[in-house]
Image (tube, rainbow, N blue to C red):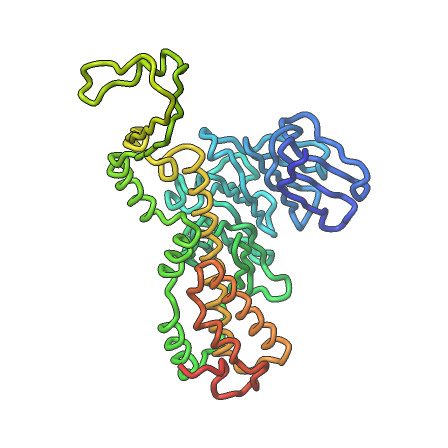
Length: 417
């Protein structure tokens, strides 16, 4: 119950709240003062991922869980099992879209593609045929004004259909590693919908944006060409934090040769010897020709001694603990590598978008332009810190920028490429 996956409010009564948790569905009818579980089905304990109301009649509700799909026709008082497939990935429901004109036409997004029904769950078929087979669909949204228009998100792409899943076309190809979080149609503009990912917020519209001036685009291209490329930035960051896989591989290659080098320990000193020296000490005093033991008792005096020892650490002959491809060090380095890659990519791409915005958008008020310039400086400073000074030249150019340039300045970025 402590892990909430989804929150849904009743379309006409905000006091009715549905919580999808990892321990089942919870329903409140008094604004959250008390919650109760539905009875009669496994929905009371199954991890619930999605709850969707039919806008034409809010008493019709669909719920998706990790094990199947359910439907209620009386506002959540009673539920029946309407969706169950063979494989666990097909039963893992991640999102639900209901036709705004027909409560029986429903599409389920699962970890194994899309499934749809046109008779309220009596029969299910794959949406898009084999296109999404074995492909997890993480988020989905239906157009509130057109039941045939659905947008779905896989891990890399945004897909769109205008014929209720008969044909799909890719709308947006993501070359990053962001995970989709939510899709929502804009209630004020039906031609716009929003996509939230773990690294960005996308506004997607059928209306093309205003074309930027050719001279502004040329300046941006020139500016980008003299800046570090993303592979260079990632390479510098990995080296700066000591998780560069190339360096770790070379360490692995050199570890065998290093193990052949011994550790040399040299010692020496002077030992005081008296006529009453212990017998064990005296017996160790051997003549130079190693043929006889010296006298048992020596006159009082000082005896110098010295020596050297060679020590080989043969464990390094097999691996070096800092580069071994397993264990705590490897897990730590790998976690830093992946998190750093994600963070550098996010900073780099946001910085590029701000550069494009500053250079190509002519009409900006003073507050917006100042915010963009401050954010540009902040992102550049972050990248410079993560890479050990790779962005020093860019930081100096930004510091020389006048805050704030005129909206119609012939060179909006105020840099001379």
